[in-house]
Length: 620
Image (tube, rainbow, N blue to C red; front, side, top):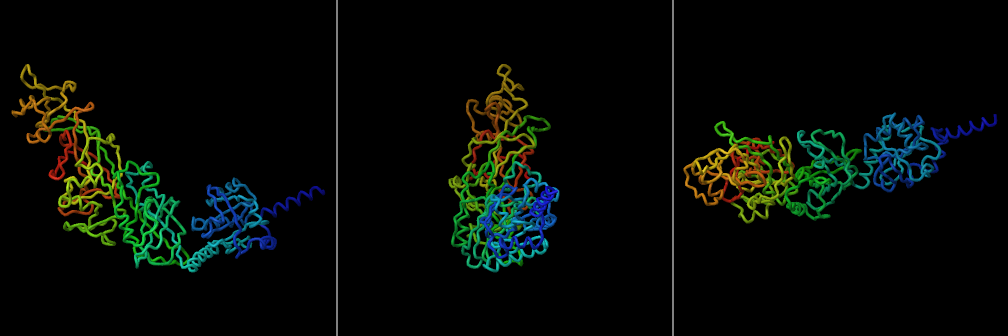
């Protein structure tokens, strides 16, 4: 009997230690340890999400520290309340749940049953329990941004949601009033990719790994501060479906005031500070991007900027009981260009007779800009004029639907017929058309697949479009004639040869037929070409003749296409009509070939305003 009483006594002590206890016992036990108004004792925790937090790291942020046991009914009630706090405030108010006498796995089991999603934390030092909850639970502490315990709650009663919510909002308001600061909750939005172009392979197009926010006094235009944000949290289900991805950063602090705000993402070469807003804009106005083209977006994400005029004169004042919600929409500095073919072979037909097949095998981008504006520039081009002095807000903008306003790149005014010399173009471009070589071609993917590249903005005035100043594509293609006319010296007539192994290395194309020699062409045409002479393309052009040469197992021909937007029939230049504009996604599909190209590319961009282009491209 004595032994039974001893077992029951031990069981009673255990129950008192791990479950809800009376108000008097609990208040006596904790009153001498942590109370409202005390500085929070030092602690360090590790969460089930793998993150470590400590009282030191949390300084400057309001948070909730809760001790519980899942077998305690009051604790269960309190956990549901804290889940609502966690859902509302997210990372702005961390909720640190520490099991009093359970393992993390035991707590996780209850988490799944109760539908909880908050992290669970375990202390690095078990003595933490004796500082906050030596005898009973639940114990819930609200700690302000100074590291002071603002309130402590137990089970008499358990703190309800409205009480905790009001307290947290009051703490946010008091902090702003006390130091003349405003808390910013920054929401960063990235425009979406077209649904037809989405692919997990290209997810880095959305990534923001680092964000700079520049603040200038809106009245004096002097530098105020610069904030660098990293570790932004991706919003899994953005409330605004217009944007594909939204990043959130909470608890950024700034003095109350009127600001001009500029945002730059994934770029770490800007200075620590500049004195004047105009100097800042000039500094980032023309930045070097030496290659002009990117094969892939780095894992850190592409360079992005906000619209320069979107956040001018922002009045940062404390909102009632909550942070100022700053929304920043970012756009990529690069444009994405996808290139493909609608089918693998295009027949060339004349008078219902197929005379050759064309297989586009390679492509090369030409006239790639070397420099770019970080913030989008525009100008009013109702009549052509010299380059203006770019100033806010007149020449900075996002996309405009006004016909007279045109997006311009850094060299827009220098690369026009009236404002440029041929020799100057070399410094503007990578792969300038005027220095064209047959090297560095990319392979054309099979039909219904696309090659891609990321390129800088490159626009050209309308009269310069086919004069070689806008971006273009040179296609290399394989020519497969149905047959070739050869000269039969015995019969002194022409014969049709269908076997490619008997064709010579150079073929001549005249009036939709291929000839194996100038002698055969003379017989068919009545022309008197020198059969011993090696003619150039330019020389043969006057006779209406083209040639193609055998190289690497195929007869080659080249086509040139200047990239431009379609959809306008007016002679007036529409916005972004001629060229490539950043943050846009272009899909170019070769849908037809209407003739034989050239055997070589010899660009003469200053005089040849309309170079031959026999490809039919559909641009989406």
